[in-house]
Figure (cartoon, rainbow, N blue to C red):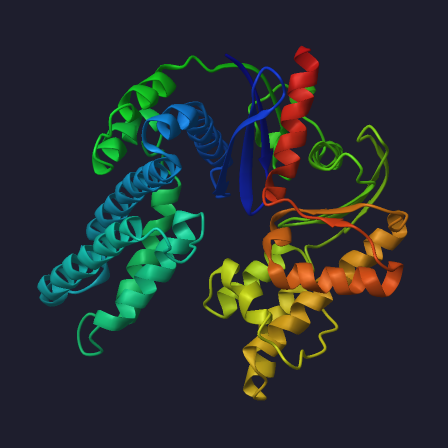
Amino acid sequence: MRTFVGIDLGSTTTKAVVLDENGDVLGRGITNSRSNYDLAAEVARTEAFVSARFSLLRAGVERAAGTAALARLLRAFRLEQRLVQWARLRQWIEATAPRAAPAALQPALAATLETLFGRLVAEEEEHFLEPEAPERSDFFRDAAGSAYARLAQEIADPRGVTHDLLVGLYDHSIISVENEPLDLGFPNHIRAALARCGDAPGMAEAAEAAANADLEVAGSVGTGYGRARLPFPKEQIRSEILCHGLGAHAMFPATRTVLDIGGQDTKAIQVDGDGLVTSFQMNDRCAAGCGRYLGYIADEMNMGLHELGPLALQSRTPVRINSTCTVFAGAELRERLSLGERREDILAGLHRAVILRAMSLIARSGGIENEFTFTGGVARNPAAVLALRNLVDENYGERRLNISADSIYTGALGAALFAWRAAA
């Protein structure tokens, strides 16, 4: 089967979309961006082809064992990937430990790490067995950091293996894990995943057929903040504006205005009935009010980025925030916390400030005439979505607001469509 790949190399996340010969989405993949951009693009691409092969085996598995079996198989596959990542993280931490603590502390440190990683792996196994387990971050760094810090807090000894020592080992090692290629592809883990699911009749055949399917890449286009780093000829590179406009049009053909809030920039785009860009505005000079700003706030609060929105929704009296400067965000946050203001109220004010900045760009690009689409990673944040709905109502009246569950892939989808059209 001929396939077409779009890669959106952003400053915080890297996304990939695989289309089939008809231009329909076959697979999607995402990873957090990192210092090694080439590796980030390859990881996202690998994840997209894992997703594509799961699309190919879907009908066979559902026919053989039912819909629930497919979901269980995917969870088993993700577990196998996570175990590889945990094992590699442990290797890095154990290699670093002799340089991080005196010799007298090494036996206690080794025992603590044995306990810590044993519990982490046990939690992963429990997560697999619980179909209704709480949602976790898609990214190993975020999910691992949260779980590791929590357990480190529980088992640390203030007079021996301290919390700071354990967290320091993690911080030193996670970068190394992220910047080396790991075997996380479909062929590497599908058989182990099947074994966890009991090798139900028919499932193995469907998985084998998906693993052996020839997915030829007939075209690729790259876009995003780091598109110049992608290993594509310049004619296979498109701007983020063009790709987000086309991607949003493919998701919602009647849309005429697109707001994309990504890691480093915010874009307000107007498109015509064919998805072609007619006008746009975007922030300049800095990343104030973009996704990276929210990421910085999450770091300051020692929270996962995905936890900000749900906490902000608990606010009853949002504070007024006038600046979204990333440089001063930490100082302002600490000052407000020291004044006794609640975290959820501060976060609600921050989200409204982010969207207020975006509303200014929308107005300068031409405003909102009718159907409107919100894309980018921030579109997955429920507090940002609520603030946007309220401000659109206040400024333009009732408008149809589209948000796809896959909105973060909008730019990669547009890039893949450019690749597909070029080969048509």
